[in-house]
Image (cartoon, rainbow, N blue to C red; front, side, top):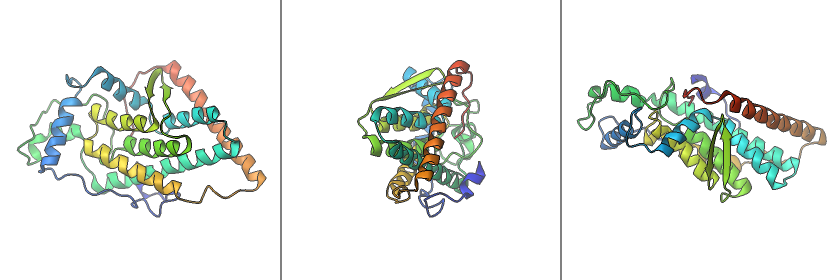
Length: 273
């Protein structure tokens, strides 16, 4: 995963172009508030987390980057009556934004190298903060990924994709995405992105400030992408054929994967970012 942060992005000037400020210091009140929040709502045995929050946490573990957002784009494109050229530009724009956001995500993760809640809470006696209480037996509701916490990858990817889709189709567009036998519905792309971010807190694998910083990063990348002219030029007809065929293949693969996932069920709660 570390190599992602060192990659050359497509449209950003560099991977650190939208690098956030540092996360809260361990001795700060902001850190203690985040610590106690995720300790309560994100634990495997939490009584504070609602059934719907648990369902969202489980859903977004399986519906990981970039699958659900490509599914949403395919559904909206098919319903919109857009031309193939418009759809090719949309998919190029959204995929570039998600990839560039991923470069920014891992640039931040390995710049700040911030510990995950499970490590912090099990070692709460080492943070020098009197407002945090160690819980050596604490575990998160979903499996913690093996790389640094800050920023949340789900939050950044979700906000970047949601912004691109909102720009293309408007944000007041209810949607449902079925993934691996699970279904979730939202009133807008923004709402879906916000839930994707919060699911990481409910799952106990990210701090609230991870999600907030990731959301800002992803939205910044999307705004930058939307402001570029890379997708405005009109290529030669032969190039359009290649683009249309390529994105048609993406759609076909997504449909096959969706069907395969539905057959496999939800046997894992492992996560990637």
